[in-house]
Length: 490
Image (cartoon, rainbow, N blue to C red):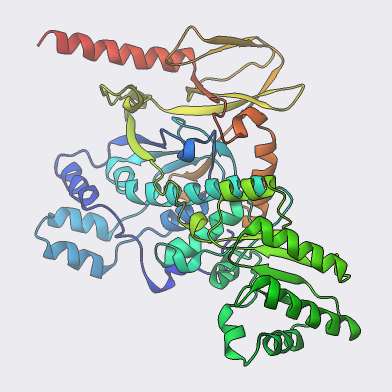
């Protein structure tokens, strides 16, 4: 596990569910279907911001939730007071033991629409009960990790610091948003609790209030340099960047240098980024501080960063806050959790949800995912959703096809197939060890590099194919035809 501390010590999240998950559980039990084995898939239908991919995140928090599932006497007393549940169901909750199998895409992987990121197999009561937490956890962290990855890719080799806690939607949004941001590529977070919990780097400098506390800006800078002589990063836009902040910073930097210290640099939190950074860079260089860095903050996102760098802005590092921690440009990740199969007498029976909106028609059955790579380039070609008992023989050609536009086909010969998901729980027992956040960040960087640049671009990215095996496609269309025939007779 990547967390040194359990944020659930002071609160139990078991009851963080939609009420209907409990009323349905009560009904399952009353109708004798509580132990019916079912399969649910969690997936999403569209990449936020018109992007080409998302970054999977949140699995470790799902693990923390599932492995500690329990109902306290307070929980049961509250449910009893609603006059909604039978004594039989409340007794079931009192003796609750988690028994599900769970598969998930490991954190850090690029993921794409319509592939099952998480699959839960287990008794109907339990699998249904997990819906809210699966969606809440994966939706939020995947959204933030994806936004962070977009920002960090634009920044290139310039570190991005996550600065968004004060603008996050609540405590958990700040804590787990910081975690997801680092998975997405951020070098550090300003959130001290997240740093402590997940063993990730923390960073921060000063606020304008530090400068305002003193009678002069120069006095404030000298005081800061006295405390942090070897980590002296000065915020220079409290009054006037070029006429006050920059000259005073250079004065203090010269004083530090005379004492044998090397100043770190300056930060600007307002104004015309391109104009100011070019002027500041020139002045710092002329003063002999070529190694002093320039840090920029102030409502940044991937589009602003891309524009100012294209304009020639001289920036060494970025601090990104509200537009990252809230994914402000598109703050909702549309993951869904759908029943896809039931099991009777050991046989998996596919189930389908039909809609007039094609993208809302589910892919039925218990499935697995392969990611297909070109052997020569090690670049990803497509993901293939197969039936759970299908295997791929890499020595034989494989024809893949678009599940909607089926005439779009491609035959692969020199390829390799890697299973995309891992089993997390086996009959309620944890069977997976989560990497650390920094290990996940490194893995994410490696996996993004295995995508073609056309998939990674911001404008009109290439549509990465998530195809269905012939077996899964036939199962889906057999069910569609079955219901079409049934409805035509009415």
